[in-house]
Amino acid sequence: MRNIFIIWKREFLGYWKSPIAYIFIAVFLLFSYLLFFLYKEGDMDFFLRNQAEMRLLFRLMPFMFIALIPPLTMRLWSEERKMGTMEILMTLPMRESEIMLGKFLAAWSFVLVPVVLTLPLTLFVGSIGRLDTGPVAGGYVGTMLLAGAYVAIGVFVSGVSRNQIISFILTVVIYFVFVLIGLDFVLSWLYEGGFKTVHLVCAFLGFIPHFESISKGVLDTKDLVYFASVILVFLVLNRFTIEIHKYS
Amino acid sequence: MIEVENLVKKYGPVTAVDGVSFKIEQGEIVGLLGPNGAGKSTTIRIMTTFLAPNGGRVVIDGMDVVKKPLEVRKVLGYLPESAPLYEEMKVSDYINFIVSARGIPSADREKLRSETVEKCGIRDVMKKAIGELSKGFRQRVGLAQALIHNPKFLILDEPTSGLDPNQIIEIRKLIKEISKDKTIILSTHILAEVEAACNRVLIMHNGRIAADSRLSDLQAGMSKEAEYEFVLAGGPDEQAEKKVRSIPEVRSVRGIGEGKYLVKADSGADAGGAIFDAVRDSGRRLTSLSRRRVTLESIFQKLTSES
Image (tube, each protein chain N blue to C red):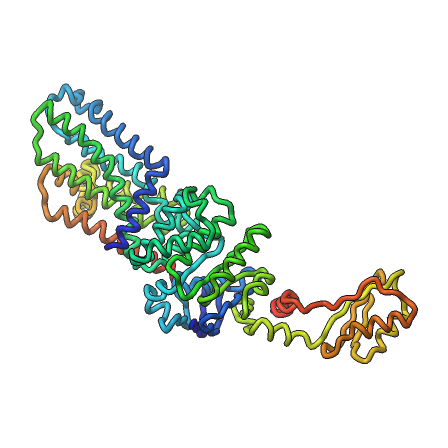
C-alpha cells in the first residue's frame, strides 16, 4: 500500500509540471461548461428546455474522454522506457504490480480533477431549479468508473508501445470501438439487421449502455461489475506485458 | 558475494550473453570491460533483476535474482548507463522520492540523506531541476540515488561515459571513496577507468568472458616480452641496428622509419642499458629510448580482436 502511494504521489505531482495537464483541465472544463449550455436537443438549449438536469454533462463524458485521456496515459510507461528511467524504477524494492497500480491510480485521480471541477456547474443548476439527486450522484459515479476503465486501457497500451504517438492512436481506436459498439443507432441497426448474438455481445461490451444505466441513478451490480472487470482485465494485461518485457 | 553461473540471455535470434560465469567476493572492485555490444549491460540488467535470464542463474548474497527479486533489490545500488533520471523533477524531490521508495526507516533518513548529498557533492544543486544539470552533476545525482540506502553491492554501468576529463576524475575519486566498504561492479569500455579504480578485471567479448583475473596478474602474464622503442639521431643506421640485435636478451629489432626502432626483448633483465651502450658503441647518438608499458589496451585488443 505504502509503495503504491509513493509511486502515485510522484506521478500525480508530476502531472502538474507538464503543460498537457493544464490543457487537459482547461479543455475539459471549457467543453463541459459550453456544451452544457449551448447544445440543443431538438432546437431547445438548456435554458429553453427549462429543466434542472445534468444528463447532458454526463452524456458528453465518453466522447470527451476519447480525445482527452490518451495524452495523460500514453507517457506513463513509454516515457520511462524511452528515457531509461524504467531501469531505476523497476529495480526499486517494490513489486511490479505496486508500481503499476501507482501509475494507474495517479492517472485516474488526475482525470477526476476536472470532473470534480464540474461541481460548481451542478451546484449552479441545483440553485436555479430542483435537481434530482439520484441521477446526479449516479452520473458522477458512472463518470468515475468510466474514467477508470479508460485509464486502465490507456496505461495498458502505453506499456505495449515505446512510441507515444502509436500509443495515442491505438488508445483512441480502442476507446472508439468500445464506445461505438454501445451506441443506440449501432445497436438498433444490429438488432434490426438480425445479428441478435452480435447485438447482445455489443450491448454487453460497450461502454455506453452500462454508463447510461448508472447515470440514470440506478446502481445495478451488473454495471458495477462490468466496469470493475474492464479495469481488472486491462491491469492484468498490463502486468503481463511488464513480465514479457523482462523476458524479451 | 555475487555468483553468476552459466548465464544466457537471448534477444530473439541474437544471443547477447552466452554462458557467462564468474564469482565476486565481498569487497572486490571489479571492472567489467568490453567493446560496445559485448553483453556487459545485459549481464548487469540481469544481475539487477531488471531482465530475466533465459538460462543460468545469478545469486547475490545467497539470494537468487529471479526467485527473490525484492530482497536482491534491497541490497543493490544501481546506476544504469547514462544516468536516466526524471528530468522535470527537482533534485531534492527526486532524492526524497528514492529515499521513500527505498523504504529507508525514518530514523535513518536524515542522516543517510545528508551524508549522501555531501559525499556526492550535490548540495548546491538540490533546488535545481534535474533537466538543467550538467552531465557531471547528473551523474552525481545518479550515484546518490544508487548509494542512498547504503547498499552492500554497487553496480555502475558506464559511470563516466560522456563526461569531460575533469568530471571523469571527480567521479573516479568519488567511486574510490565509496569503495571502502562495498562490493562494486563497474562496467566500462574505457580501459584507463579499470586501471584507475579496480583491482580485478572481467573482459567480455561476444557475450562471453574472455578474461577474468586480477589486474596485476593480467599485466604480468601478458608481458613475458618487453618492448622498447628508440630513436637514432640523424636517421636510420644499419651498424647500430646490428649492434642492438647482437644483445643476448634482444629477440628482434624492427625499423619503423625515420630512425625509429622497435625492439622486442625478454622481460627478465632490463635491456634498456644494453641498447644504450650498443648504440653508443656504433658511434651514433640516441634522441630517445623508452620501454613500452604493457597496457590494458594491448591486452584488450589482443583478447577482443580475435572472434
